[in-house]
Length: 160
Image 1 (tube, rainbow, N blue to C red):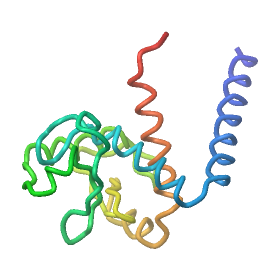
Image 2 (cartoon, helix red, strand yellow; image 1 turned 60 degrees about the vertical axis):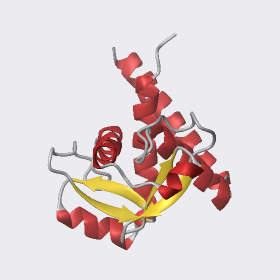
Image 3 (cartoon, rainbow, N blue to C red; image 1 turned 90 degrees about the vertical axis):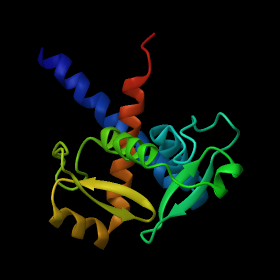
Image 4 (cartoon, rainbow, N blue to C red; image 1 turned 30 degrees about the vertical axis):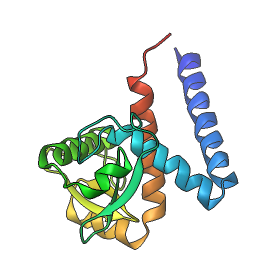
Protein backbone atom coordinates (compact mmCIF):
# COMPACT_ATOMS: atom_id res chain seq x y z
CA UNK A 1 0.00 0.00 0.00
CA UNK A 2 2.80 2.39 0.89
CA UNK A 3 4.52 1.63 -2.44
CA UNK A 4 1.32 2.44 -4.34
CA UNK A 5 0.93 5.75 -2.50
CA UNK A 6 4.58 6.64 -3.12
CA UNK A 7 4.19 5.83 -6.81
CA UNK A 8 1.04 7.95 -7.04
CA UNK A 9 2.71 10.90 -5.32
CA UNK A 10 5.77 10.66 -7.56
CA UNK A 11 3.55 10.48 -10.66
CA UNK A 12 1.62 13.57 -9.58
CA UNK A 13 4.83 15.44 -8.85
CA UNK A 14 6.23 14.52 -12.26
CA UNK A 15 3.02 15.71 -13.96
CA UNK A 16 3.16 19.01 -12.07
CA UNK A 17 6.81 19.45 -13.02
CA UNK A 18 6.02 18.79 -16.70
CA UNK A 19 3.22 21.36 -16.56
CA UNK A 20 5.54 23.93 -14.96
CA UNK A 21 8.18 23.31 -17.65
CA UNK A 22 5.54 23.67 -20.36
CA UNK A 23 4.44 27.02 -18.92
CA UNK A 24 8.03 28.27 -18.71
CA UNK A 25 8.76 27.39 -22.33
CA UNK A 26 5.71 29.17 -23.75
CA UNK A 27 5.71 32.58 -25.34
CA UNK A 28 3.02 34.99 -24.16
CA UNK A 29 1.07 34.30 -27.35
CA UNK A 30 1.25 30.53 -26.86
CA UNK A 31 0.15 30.83 -23.25
CA UNK A 32 -2.81 33.01 -24.24
CA UNK A 33 -3.79 30.64 -27.05
CA UNK A 34 -3.68 27.68 -24.62
CA UNK A 35 -5.73 29.60 -22.05
CA UNK A 36 -8.26 30.59 -24.74
CA UNK A 37 -8.65 26.95 -25.84
CA UNK A 38 -9.28 25.88 -22.26
CA UNK A 39 -11.85 28.63 -21.78
CA UNK A 40 -13.61 27.77 -25.06
CA UNK A 41 -13.88 24.13 -23.97
CA UNK A 42 -15.23 25.08 -20.54
CA UNK A 43 -17.58 27.83 -21.77
CA UNK A 44 -19.07 25.39 -24.31
CA UNK A 45 -21.82 27.66 -25.71
CA UNK A 46 -22.28 31.07 -27.30
CA UNK A 47 -23.86 33.69 -25.01
CA UNK A 48 -25.92 35.01 -27.94
CA UNK A 49 -27.17 31.95 -29.84
CA UNK A 50 -26.58 29.20 -27.30
CA UNK A 51 -24.86 27.25 -30.08
CA UNK A 52 -21.85 25.01 -29.46
CA UNK A 53 -18.58 26.94 -29.74
CA UNK A 54 -16.60 25.75 -32.75
CA UNK A 55 -19.64 24.52 -34.67
CA UNK A 56 -19.70 27.69 -36.82
CA UNK A 57 -15.94 28.00 -37.28
CA UNK A 58 -13.36 29.46 -34.91
CA UNK A 59 -14.99 31.17 -31.91
CA UNK A 60 -14.74 34.98 -31.71
CA UNK A 61 -13.28 36.48 -28.53
CA UNK A 62 -15.06 39.57 -27.15
CA UNK A 63 -14.93 41.66 -23.97
CA UNK A 64 -18.28 42.17 -22.23
CA UNK A 65 -19.40 44.79 -19.73
CA UNK A 66 -17.53 47.33 -17.68
CA UNK A 67 -15.32 44.64 -16.16
CA UNK A 68 -14.29 43.61 -19.71
CA UNK A 69 -14.98 39.93 -19.09
CA UNK A 70 -13.69 37.98 -22.08
CA UNK A 71 -16.00 35.36 -23.54
CA UNK A 72 -16.33 33.66 -26.90
CA UNK A 73 -19.07 33.89 -29.51
CA UNK A 74 -19.82 31.12 -31.97
CA UNK A 75 -19.46 33.33 -35.06
CA UNK A 76 -19.01 36.84 -36.45
CA UNK A 77 -22.77 37.12 -36.94
CA UNK A 78 -23.29 37.03 -33.18
CA UNK A 79 -21.28 40.24 -32.81
CA UNK A 80 -24.50 42.09 -33.70
CA UNK A 81 -26.67 40.15 -31.21
CA UNK A 82 -27.56 40.62 -27.58
CA UNK A 83 -26.56 38.31 -24.76
CA UNK A 84 -29.29 35.89 -23.77
CA UNK A 85 -29.51 35.88 -19.94
CA UNK A 86 -30.15 32.11 -19.85
CA UNK A 87 -27.06 31.38 -21.96
CA UNK A 88 -25.03 33.81 -19.83
CA UNK A 89 -26.12 32.00 -16.65
CA UNK A 90 -25.21 28.63 -18.21
CA UNK A 91 -21.77 29.90 -19.19
CA UNK A 92 -21.07 31.16 -15.68
CA UNK A 93 -22.32 27.90 -14.19
CA UNK A 94 -19.96 26.05 -16.58
CA UNK A 95 -16.98 28.15 -15.45
CA UNK A 96 -17.82 27.74 -11.75
CA UNK A 97 -18.31 23.98 -12.08
CA UNK A 98 -15.07 23.51 -14.04
CA UNK A 99 -13.09 25.62 -11.58
CA UNK A 100 -14.61 23.85 -8.57
CA UNK A 101 -12.18 25.27 -6.01
CA UNK A 102 -11.05 28.65 -4.78
CA UNK A 103 -7.56 29.18 -6.24
CA UNK A 104 -6.45 31.04 -3.10
CA UNK A 105 -7.72 28.84 -0.26
CA UNK A 106 -8.10 25.68 -2.39
CA UNK A 107 -11.48 25.00 -0.74
CA UNK A 108 -14.48 23.75 -2.68
CA UNK A 109 -16.47 26.71 -4.00
CA UNK A 110 -19.62 27.48 -2.01
CA UNK A 111 -22.96 27.74 -3.81
CA UNK A 112 -22.87 31.52 -3.38
CA UNK A 113 -19.25 31.89 -4.55
CA UNK A 114 -17.93 35.40 -5.02
CA UNK A 115 -16.00 36.29 -8.15
CA UNK A 116 -13.65 38.76 -9.75
CA UNK A 117 -12.45 39.43 -13.28
CA UNK A 118 -8.67 39.01 -13.59
CA UNK A 119 -7.12 39.86 -16.94
CA UNK A 120 -10.49 39.35 -18.61
CA UNK A 121 -11.18 35.98 -16.97
CA UNK A 122 -13.81 35.29 -14.35
CA UNK A 123 -12.34 33.69 -11.24
CA UNK A 124 -14.57 32.33 -8.51
CA UNK A 125 -13.50 32.50 -4.86
CA UNK A 126 -14.77 31.32 -1.51
CA UNK A 127 -14.77 34.74 0.17
CA UNK A 128 -14.14 38.46 -0.48
CA UNK A 129 -10.60 38.54 1.00
CA UNK A 130 -9.54 36.10 -1.72
CA UNK A 131 -10.59 38.64 -4.35
CA UNK A 132 -8.05 41.13 -2.98
CA UNK A 133 -5.26 38.54 -3.24
CA UNK A 134 -6.15 37.70 -6.85
CA UNK A 135 -6.47 41.36 -7.84
CA UNK A 136 -3.02 42.07 -6.34
CA UNK A 137 -1.25 39.28 -8.27
CA UNK A 138 -3.54 37.42 -10.70
CA UNK A 139 -1.03 35.31 -12.66
CA UNK A 140 -0.40 32.46 -10.21
CA UNK A 141 -4.12 32.16 -9.54
CA UNK A 142 -4.99 32.17 -13.24
CA UNK A 143 -2.48 29.36 -13.79
CA UNK A 144 -4.13 27.40 -11.00
CA UNK A 145 -7.58 28.00 -12.52
CA UNK A 146 -6.16 26.68 -15.81
CA UNK A 147 -5.06 23.53 -13.95
CA UNK A 148 -8.54 23.15 -12.46
CA UNK A 149 -10.10 23.56 -15.93
CA UNK A 150 -7.70 21.01 -17.41
CA UNK A 151 -8.46 18.45 -14.69
CA UNK A 152 -12.20 19.01 -15.13
CA UNK A 153 -12.05 18.57 -18.91
CA UNK A 154 -9.95 15.40 -18.53
CA UNK A 155 -12.50 14.01 -16.07
CA UNK A 156 -15.24 14.47 -18.68
CA UNK A 157 -13.38 12.46 -21.32
CA UNK A 158 -14.48 8.85 -21.66
CA UNK A 159 -11.93 6.33 -20.47
CA UNK A 160 -10.51 3.90 -23.00
